Length: 59
Image (cartoon, rainbow, N blue to C red; front, side, top):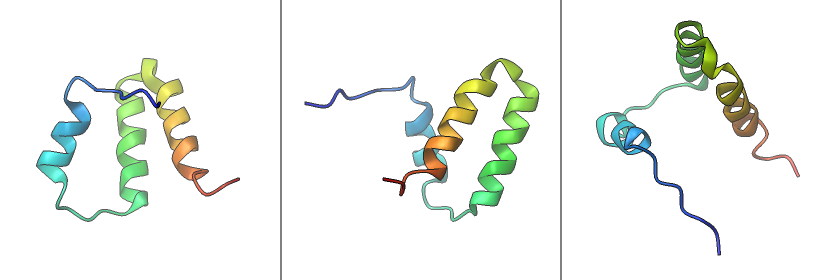
């Protein structure tokens, strides 16, 4: 059985507030860069998330 991870409402808030919007991955990448610039302590987890998303189709 796979564990379910519940955030502190961040992902849920994102889906609720912006779930109907269509954005490009270039836009998301830009926002991630801005976030890392503002919060450099989160660079490693953001980079790991980006790498995971980029490689989803890899075997």
